[in-house]
Image (cartoon, rainbow, N blue to C red; front, side):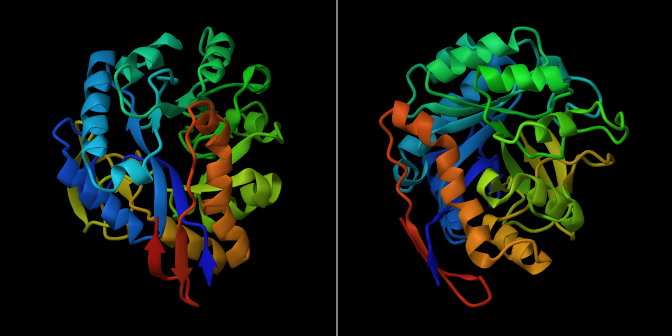
Length: 331
């Protein structure tokens, strides 16, 4: 069986390479992208998380130089995803993002970050309840960027205002939430109340149980769902301790990535082909539907932003075995 190449909208690192590390170079980037290609991923948005503005700018410049100088980067990376820094710093919502680096939205930050880069910022994740969010979302969309929400305690009115301003995606829906929430007035229900918002879902069995994944997929439908990994450098790498975005994280033998000594998840060790196999094995979608969520739907979610920058999202091709193992992938 053949499909379009997979496309990951949220990947922070891979195969021992941290995209948030300022020491990244073209050779390391090629190693990471080659390992991703082996999992069927023919395109991705390397993702940077919250950091002080000067640090975030340096990380993005170094990442961009590594991609521009690599062999696979120009073909596989159309742009970037910046997750933060305009998120909710409260405990349970911030996740592993540094709360002290968060602030109210300022759309001009992304213009400054993008200046001089070889490719644009195509996707931004923010918290819609922060002051000035609707205006910032409108500015981001006018600048050719898609906007998603996460790490947020937004209510129904906040999310509705964000959607009316141009927000179209939920980043890792069902996560970056505290264990205790109001039974009806909570950001998960507020997002699910907006049928046009596309849900990005992490199908690793840890961020969402198989049952919770199935429930969200039934609500959103295949056509409004995208598989993402939120992978960090511990993906396609052995269990152990790693340094991610300046913090220690640990991958356990069962594939969970956490801040050592804490329950906080710190991205995932998921690969996108494994996510496809998981969803099919859980019985929530057919192979064709699942592959669509990991490829066609992902590209469609950023197609408007890509077109605004004159970028063509080439689909590539993957050949799959009957067991949904990648046999070959081409750009």
